[in-house]
Length: 129
Image 1 (cartoon, one colour):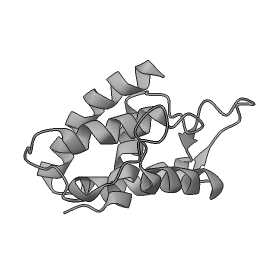
Image 2 (image 1 turned 90 degrees about the horizontal axis):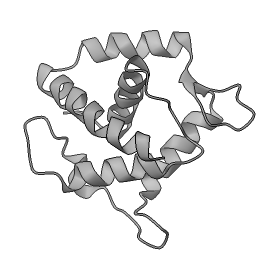
Image 3 (image 1 turned 90 degrees about the vertical axis):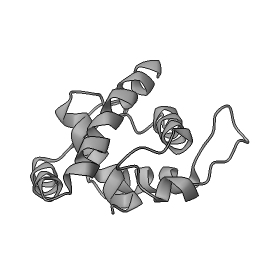
């Protein structure tokens, strides 16, 4: 079983490894991705937390306050870095990337397969933004 926080961390790691631009100042892609995952059929490896993840529909797209808060935390604590004046491209620091990679390698194969499946969906959502 993987927690929400760990899932997001491993997803960021895989996004970076797949050369998908990490955008944090425009969180729409993140919310749309997680909403799609929540609504997707049950498949092997789908984390239980997705069932309970709440989305608010007051804006132009569905938004998870929990996800938004965690993404902001990653930026504020320097886990993800940028040098772009528009803050449109982020990346993991080398040390964090190496640490998360070691932790990822210890995961159960089922969750690794699910995360790799999610990368395909993420590519679609991140292209839209």
